Amino acid sequence: MMSHSIHTSSGLTQGSALKPTIVFYDGACPICQKEIHHYRKLKSLKPIDWQDISGHCPMLEQYGIDKEEAMKRFHVIADNGVISQGAEAFLALWRALPGYRHLANIIEFCHLQGLL
Image (cartoon, rainbow, N blue to C red; front, side, top):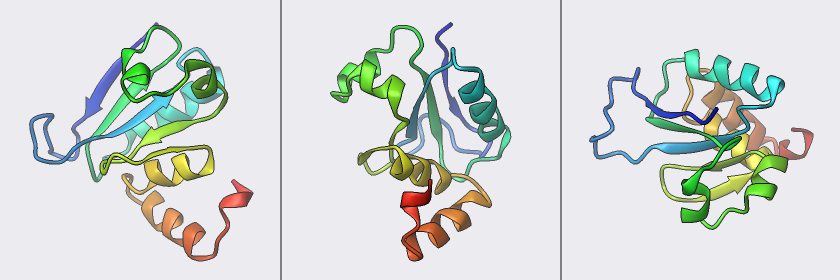
């Protein structure tokens, strides 16, 4: 079942000046569901648009992302428009989440992306 929403618990609304971080995830994957559910419970520092790609997701095409590739590797579009995948995508998401942003900074500072 496809679902998407912009998380506004940070107090920011969809109409705010900030562009949301866009997270593409496989809503049919139990492990993915559990992890995304955890992230969605957090009060985000920036707006996040959660895009379930297990069904039809026009936004993938809009950004030129192949659905098959997106199903294999986690993809995120940061609020500045940069598309990342894999470990870099997790860091982009984590920068928008409390607590995790510090982890993202440490991982980048120590060049540990290869461990993710």
